[in-house]
Length: 221
Image (spheres, rainbow, N blue to C red):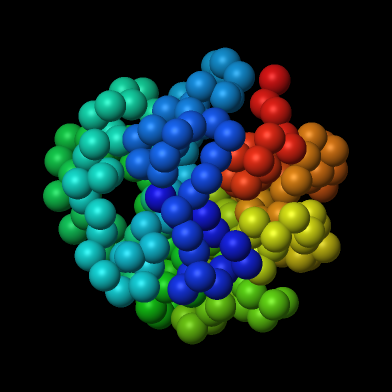
């Protein structure tokens, strides 16, 4: 497992965490779950399969290991899905465990307007509106079609990831205002508990966070 910094993927290095020894995905996953407070709903882990996002094959073996070792955990998975058929192919590879995986369709990977239409009615589908340096990563034009967005949305500001700059709440609020009836999750930049409270006040149902947990600037209590 690597540490994401500003979306500069060629520079990513194995993660170093205060929560666990080494960088093996299962060890990191267990440490994150142990650091989280008890919740009434099932625990969720977000996974970005960088090999798949950059055009390689999904890490099926790693996913199967995580699903087998972490019963009851749901994985939100961005594996560079260009269309629903790619997600369904991975579901077949995962077998029965696939019911605990929700596919994330990143706008940087989504292939077409037709693909967006196909996921709009899928209650499990998640659309991530990806940007870097204030520029949408959006070859299919899905940023311009809020009427076709699925029920769960992520605002992913890649240049804020691991950068310690705080969340981009202005972009989050602007996009959320286009479809306020969706469930909105932010991603990138969260540093501490105050950032988390500010994000919640802005309407975020949650915020994807990694660096602040690994560095110890955010403690989940």
